[in-house]
Length: 223
Image (cartoon, rainbow, N blue to C red):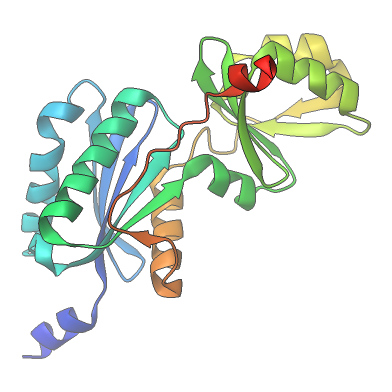
């Protein structure tokens, strides 16, 4: 009886993080991780749903035992982002379990407000988290704007920094510092913490997660 009562008072939740190379799923209880599983992006579509069910079953739980599901809503590569969000939305639709979408770029920008976060958006585009705002720009346009605006040295973090480090150094020279030791993207720990925080605060709880797409800079330039 004591075991059952404890479980009734616990907050079990699932976290799905569609990232650049993989989708990571995690099972949590009261902000503590119980298990993690990583699916390579090539295997996501075929195995994600079954992996979620297996992970929950392995801990003698049912889907209905979950208080909520948190998922990375982007920005991220289309394939992994779509697979994660679509699967979570499907579970939410079928079960009525509340959902929480987490914008990884926004969260990184809030965790490291003193830095500019730059993530790979492909085709020479980058996602940018700066001063609490997020956007997408062509890397050359962004760096030209930075060169004109920067008056004191700034620090960049994120996987876009690694990808474009030569171009950044060439254009900005001593105006910028690049840091490799910080997260290259929002990992599952960051997504899980943000999801649990929102659940406790009863904030941003939805029945459908809308993926975050920021690649609209060309329309802005055309205006």
